[in-house]
Image (cartoon, rainbow, N blue to C red; front, top):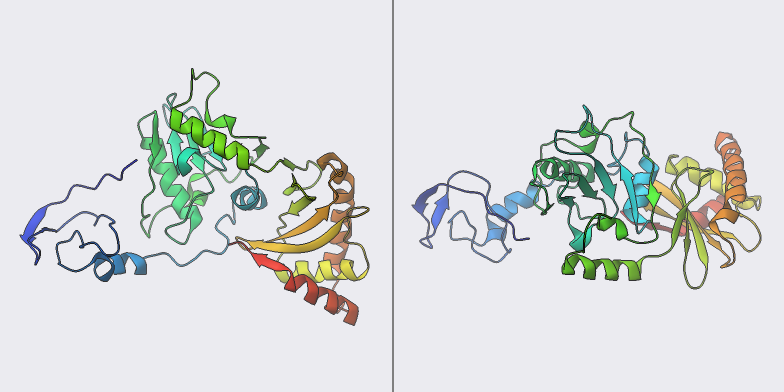
Length: 328
């Protein structure tokens, strides 16, 4: 959907003869285009420069303080198709029967207000402010005010504004439901999907990696790939403490989840660590449950230790550190 430019007041003409904008937000244009303010300079050398400097400082843990922080990170970075009902502070506005977080929406829309007034809020979108929680709060507020039956377009988010932590109930449950595909985009009551949505749905389903959330431990997700399966587990512990604990277990040969499984490294995502295991293709998500629970107990013991790392443990820690990949 094309971005609607805000109304402005016409003032004195600039060097280009273009009317200057004297109030209202300066619309975003291409970096090399003339600035809409009428200064005669290119946007990147005028208000584009101001916009770049106005970007909020990067927030390393945008979901900190929200219920289910580890699952927020997993759904943002690792899980193709999932939804979560959200609980707003003060309850739902009139005419909004529900608000649901979704990993991805058709055409990468930031949010969608359905015909029945319900809201779908997309998670896997770009951040314009440096604070994903602020971007998503802005999108959510606009979605609640959008006319039913319309998507919410992206925009540059104001530097000052509420964050998700200000809008969502801190006591609300956060219970992701992982889906095999993106059919949740289309309500069951709908007669037929829009052709663009149908095409987007087909492409998304073709690219989705089969993923299952484990039930016995928090924020651990099994996934299936052609060569091998994986377990990717978002953990809330401080990185240095977690690396020490994993190093203790690695040196003791206790990081495995069964035969032919191996801790191969970790991701960094939104301020949290995500250890990753390679699994044999024959190992299902259900078969991961017991060894994952047993590993959680071993990890708790290793985290509780204050003893200095041995030489072997330090070597193991160095190997783990070298196999880290930063996602965000």
